[in-house]
Image (cartoon, rainbow, N blue to C red; front, side, top):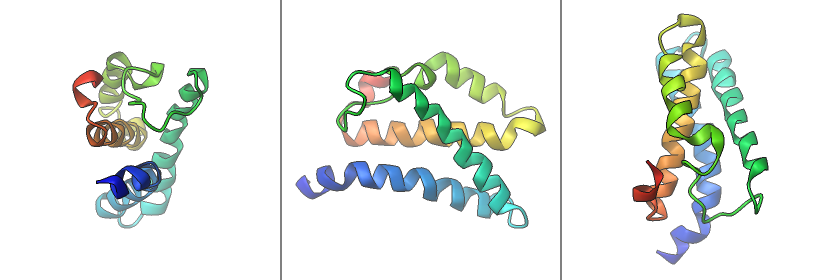
Length: 114
């Protein structure tokens, strides 16, 4: 279990790139690179980490701690699924939140999240 704790932050960051790529490739084989790039742009919601103190804490669950990782923004991300123009971005945002939830679960902090 100690090994997992050591690699968890790096694995978390890698999954933020790999999962959107796999999803984009599966859902849009002809346009997967463009849609993967849009979903990667959704990772900009992590800019809200700049408001935290300390700036980076590998043992902190992002959900409900950072402003763009709370229930209200999550509701907005869900609503963004309906217009076709924002669907790929919304999916990227939701994948980001889901991956952060998995990270919180791995730290044993999911009960604190939502």
